[in-house]
Length: 548
Ligand code: GLC
Ligand code: CA
Image (cartoon, rainbow, N blue to C red; front, side, top):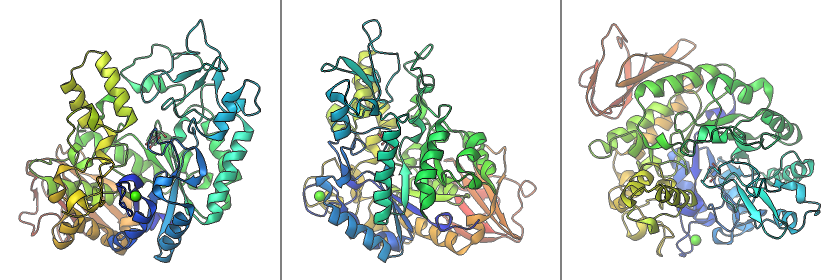
């Protein structure tokens, strides 16, 4: 079924690092408003902003102390209302981050809950007695260390899957759900266009809170078994949908680690009325130790193709390769040393033209890269600091730790947006809250706007092409050249129209034969090397799109 959000191209904003409007070095809501014309001009239809709520910033806004207030550093509710109005005035839509697996430990709900064992809100969070003088069970937090924190006042532990300042809400409790639903309606009635639902995979916990057998501290998968996509989670989603989501014309995207293609339809199957899309994790391996390794093209083919096929005619994919929790994709999958522009644009073509709604993370459209860290003081992210501590305890050297965090750390994507070659990359008039990537004089919006061959203009061309061709939105995806070790190729087909997308995911040239995939009579419509020199040979990181 055709839908506005299927045709949309989305853009993710991390407010703290996007644009500072008032010279305090911190990005803010008015800064976003200033840049709406830039986004409109790029071709963006849908904006997702990461949390902008009141927060003590233990996890940069993902620890919310008031869901109905704006973080003072980001502006006021009046600024938010103006932003929303200006987004709508430009024919764009805005979704916000719904963070309800946990709150901040400064949220009034938690302050009440922790005040005494018989407070009416005690059951809003997950409190347990110690077991044999230790934590109630052996669960590890996703950001390292125990998932339990002892509260001396009431002599019990509370559960926190993320930092100790992010206590988990108890979703078994119906008052919790009612309060969350009221808050959601309040935002929806304001006119927002939907939610990205944070950490939805973790809402349901194994009911007995038993120990995880054989925990392996270096791997997340077993440790998360008791709360990652746990049996019964979909009942919560149905409840939320019945009570809130179904009553609005909105779009929803769940952050869904632990979901695999074979079960995707249960989550986003259209007739089920649950969520519209999920951000699946299979291709990014977020939170896993291997996250920094470059995947083989064969692995990408297997994962993307499984998702494309699983949802064909049944549901819809959210397409993404970057976000605020990941390193920069050109640094990760591409070759920033020899083929920065080519690999940034090749990866763009690869994911953008599959079936689904493409999301662009701020700075991805100009090929921003990972940054350089020299010591502990260069990291901001709470999960990086915890990881540092844990690796140091394991006897890893400072060099090893920095190397690991350089390849995996979330701070890479949180450096200020590079608008131009002026001081502070045009992000702010003051010293930014977080160090600007040293390459901003070379990689920035202003210079790429002038350059017809820039990464930015390649994204613009992709967006325009997708908008003009329904086949690139709704067409069926078919993997081509399946066994090729360098080239990822696929076609899209709809009502007799066919496109072929070819991407050489390597720093060497790559050939295929006409017998394997013929381009006879095909028309070249877009590419990152022009003109085409040899039909059946791609340069390093060359991407081409043909219409048949
Ligand atoms: C999600 C967010 C991440 C945050 C975590 C806890 O994974 O994307 O940034 O730290 O949830 O809220
Ligand atoms: Ca500011």
